[in-house]
Amino acid sequence: MSDQLASIVTLTNAAASDVHNFSLLSLFSQASLTVKIVIVLLIGCSFWSWTIIFAKTSLIRRLKATANKFEDAFWNCGSIEMFFDNIVNRGEDPFVNVFISGMNEWHRAKNKKTPLNAIAIRERIETMMRVTIGREIDFLERHIGFLATVGSTAPFVGLFGTVWGIMNSFESIGLDQNTSLTAVAPGIAEALFATALGLVVTIPAVIAYNKISGEINRYQNRLDAFVDEFSTIISRQMEEEQG
Image 1 (cartoon, rainbow, N blue to C red):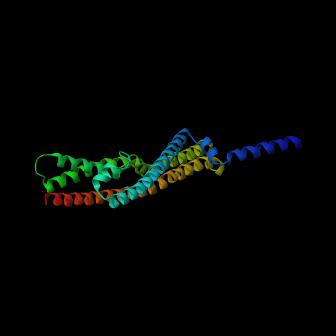
Image 2 (cartoon, rainbow, N blue to C red):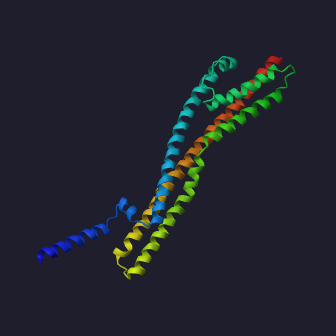
Image 3 (cartoon, rainbow, N blue to C red):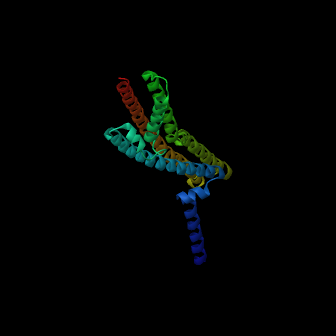
């Protein structure tokens, strides 16, 4: 008799242990299908967000380093024509691409047989260089809109999982006529898990979006400043050639 009682107590303790197992894996496995979909969606968004964050951060770091090298080489060169002939990383670096677009327009203007109009040429050069800047910035900003979308929607997705988990808790109360913690704990736990996961996904995405957007804006300002400096050099050179 005592052995049977001990077996019953052991089975009861094991069942209680299973019921109150609130590890992340257990919470996911015990959650309803709707909450599981929410959790999988949030995890997928988090994975893609971190992929974008690491990719854009490393790209911006590399572009800042190459921009420093380009500007040092540009301002220390004896002639922009010689610098243009010896330039490397064509098509890879935004500063190089912007410089090439300006030089190409400058060469087209010089090859024309009509007299040079300094103001018109300077405007065309600046226009071509700023068009190139627009293309380069569009490439840098690609995919970061996803971070903004995740940052604004992930909390509500998590909140949806929260509401659904609480609904499951009330459903358990209604079906079992039991208001004990054992009856409502699983639903509340999965609800809180969805809320926490939504915040875990949202916070890094918002911080990264603001950080990356700020870095891209500062990089664009450097490109714009270079366009102004380059057009000034071209204007001065035209004035010297005309005499």
